[in-house]
Image 1: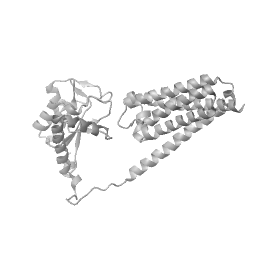
Image 2: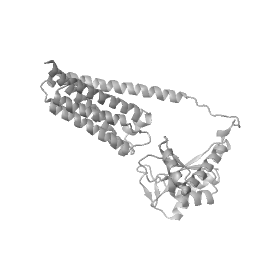
Image 3: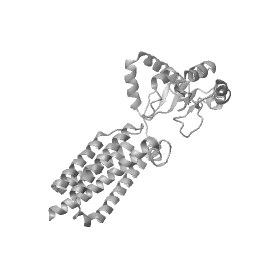
Image 4: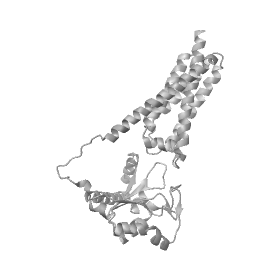
Length: 340
């Protein structure tokens, strides 16, 4: 710790504090006496600050008693800053839209400086709150001072002077990630296309005798269900998700097309519905998930985070494919009817 600080690094200690275990750490409430907390849980952090010179700390998800650790003034202000003499910045653990207990107002008041977020969704909210809350704005100024002071007195400022300016460059990691996204998008699209082609071959003979009205209703219902689960995803969204109204509109339009095509037996209308479904599905993959590697881990990795997001995502994803397959069956039957 001290060696890293001597080289000008900003050294974070985490998770501060009483992060008793990893599983369900977002919901655990740890109860302990002050003596136990000071002698067991805080001792390592105390050494890191007083002897190692740590100048940054990440607060934890858990609650101490019934209060979130990042909003515990006794922990972040009284003990960390006043008793131990900590001079630096405090940061939350990862903030997501469905983690409402990590409240900005009470956290700032308690000495938590910044909220760890991978997007700008929280910035606009904080700006709106600060415009109406003078106390919050004052706490934000204190937070900004702590953050700027910490990094101004670090190696991040090496070589900087009054004429320096920031130039954006694209790292090889960003380039590789972009290539990985494109490859995954193409592979997923090919997989979906292969599924549809396989379905076409299997149902083509049965399509002519199928009850088109029933198929159209099924296709429309599936498209609407896909839209519903898509809305659920936005409600339970993480910072990685961005609601796209176009996807929702395309799914609803495809549902209408399927219903009308089933009644009127218009193959072209069924084809339009199928096109809308496929465009919605592809746009969903590109704009919503954006194929970041950590998103794939989130969805398929079986982590505890999947609870609020994974199930509706998988259902919506699957329902869009089923709607496309049902639409393809309807289109094949309707076009076959038109030829006759």
